[in-house]
Image 1 (cartoon, rainbow, N blue to C red):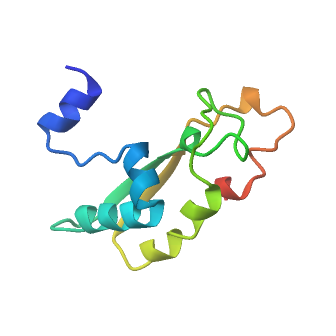
Image 2 (cartoon, one colour; image 1 turned 30 degrees about the vertical axis):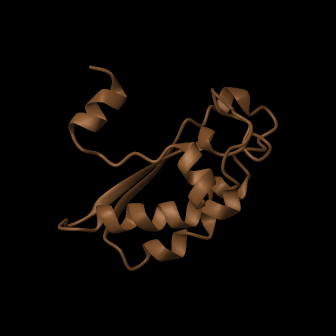
Length: 110
């Protein structure tokens, strides 16, 4: 069973880039926050850095133009303060592709 098929089987709400572009990241993130805070003691976020436009984050394995602007994600973070967030992980950073350290020093890496 492939990843997307498994997610559908488990009834996981998936937001694709087309929907994010249509509705806006802010609206999608708020819907996701509503979903993950229902009937739970907490949740975690795994944030894939190659979802950020490579203009801002280059040290990822699969950079794709047209990704998220980092400030759009960073402006959403205060909404998480009153929620039961238990973990936030940043994934897909590849230090071997960050010779200048530009990605590591960007605001998205905190």
